[in-house]
Image 1 (cartoon, rainbow, N blue to C red):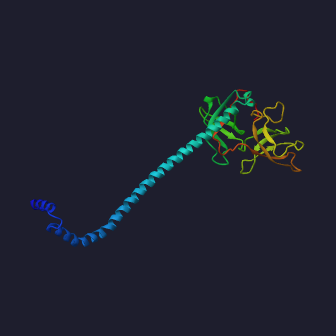
Image 2 (image 1 turned 60 degrees about the horizontal axis):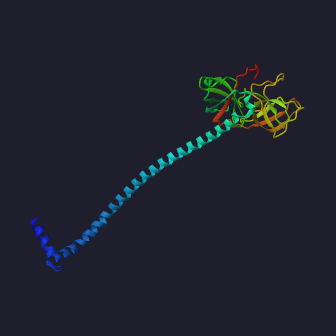
Image 3 (image 1 turned 90 degrees about the horizontal axis):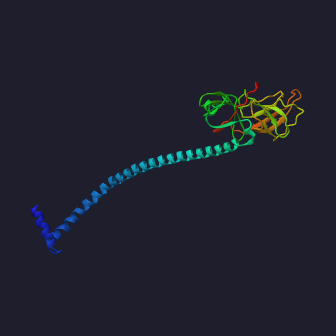
Length: 276
């Protein structure tokens, strides 16, 4: 250490042409090839290290971006769902205030749909409203577009609704334009098509006519549990055969039964008729 300190002191005090400066220059010249070789040998390892670090950094950044993207997608889905529910509730609120239901339904209850039909053979839904909300069996269920079905089973906070597309469902209906009376039932096909059954041949029904519930008609051969004037669908085909005394009237429903989210139950306190 003492020698090193002496040499450093002499080095900085002597002139640039001194012996120590010359020795340093010569040493640098001799060691330069070794320095170049060492750099060339170390460079691939240095580059490999930098590449590996960049790869791990890119993977971590990619994972963070995927998580952010997933979170944003979930937020967008939630926002879109809430917006759809808000629009549906607003429409149902306007429907609830419509004069055509006020005489029949003393209490109109809105409810979320907890489960939709799982197959074409199970045409029922479960709603988040039950006996505690004043719901009873046979109460009519609607949306802003039209008739959905009726309540067939009631628990304390939930209820089972049988859709109009169920093979056992039927509702007395009429052609809004011509007042032809019939019974709306589900067709035998896989699609959500209905048909207006038992319409006599002497009654006029046109393609494009609006089909609505007929309501309770005293003394008529077809009775109903549903209030009148609820939209059901539109006539898409009218036909008849020589053998059948009734017309073949096909109806396309307004309600999309496969994607129900919010419904309104017309909770009636009137006495129930004996026939559906």
